[in-house]
Length: 532
Image 1 (cartoon, rainbow, N blue to C red):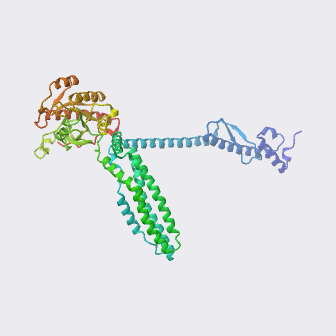
Image 2 (cartoon, rainbow, N blue to C red):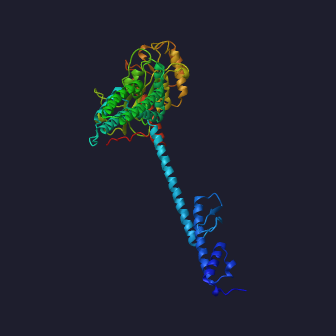
Image 3 (cartoon, one colour):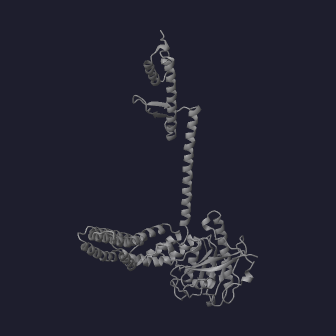
């Protein structure tokens, strides 16, 4: 028997509405409820469905791994959890879900763009790391005496606070601030040296890494210390000075009288200088000596064509560099004159950007200057190319080569250069280290290691004559490759050598331009074209 729906009291309607909402079934109670109960229950059910849909869309956006989502209703009378299936929603709820997804997709795209920008920034940093000149960017290290004098000036400028009326407190504050200032003046430069060296050495160009390693190894043979050992000693000295400075600062701050605070400050200042000299003086002096050797390494430009002269010791490489470039290496008649890389420059004029044989060196006047009127409108652009004089090499395995020989190999391996191999077949180079047989064997070994480099062979000191049979031996090794007979003293073959150097520089320039199309690091500076 059905109840009269219009006769149910309001309290019964509330109970029926609650049951209807919790059961989520309209048909179950519809036959026992009035119109008011059904209407209220329908409204609550719609509100509940909308809330569930909103929560479900948020959960879907946060996690897409699970196919079911656990939703806890805030108005539930029990701890029962309702599991809702992922179903497509329509109407206003569907629009809200779509907008939420769009927002999440927009955020993800923004994150992807940020990651791409970070990668681009990393690539730019990597490009910067590959530039040469890092050894000259090493932090400047001041001597221990300079650092101590600077700390004394800082201590002198630190005065008492006149606003503090109490004499003891004023002396305490002045003593503590003075000791703290001295500690910072002594420790901060040491910290900057260690961090600066680690950063620059980590970002060096491969050629400069070899130079730094060879310089340190040469120093290690002298006193057994490596660069890392010196940096560690400086770091440990800084920590000891820092701890001592903190102790003296605390003593001055906790002094019982003003007089005791000032005495503690004066004593602590002198003790800090003595401790700094004992612990950090030696390592700082060592790092300064290493820095002098590292910073004198020539900075080779990667975007400029270069020619490196290679050969045995005392074959005339330095004389050739002096003759065709602006470098002034030491020239003497004994082996191993060149004990490092010497970098010279030659101004080259290019007729166009396409051919490799478009490089020339115009005639200069008595003062060594070019005639601007003759050059006007004749050439596309001018470029300052590089000529490198390298230490002599001997015929022996790589494991037994010294630092100078490894430096020569590093220049050919890591720098975009052409190679000029210089030989002395007059017999005056010396039989022990630069015999004719050794020179020819060295040429064979080096050429086999770098077969694709632009190459020219030069027989220097031609005015002194050739040892009998040396020409035939050379022809056998060269196997038909062209060579230039050169005498700097008698001016024989100098013009031919310059023409050949220009040809090789042109080949290197074309290669660099091709590499610049792929990698901007190898792009040469924009040339200033001459106006007609």
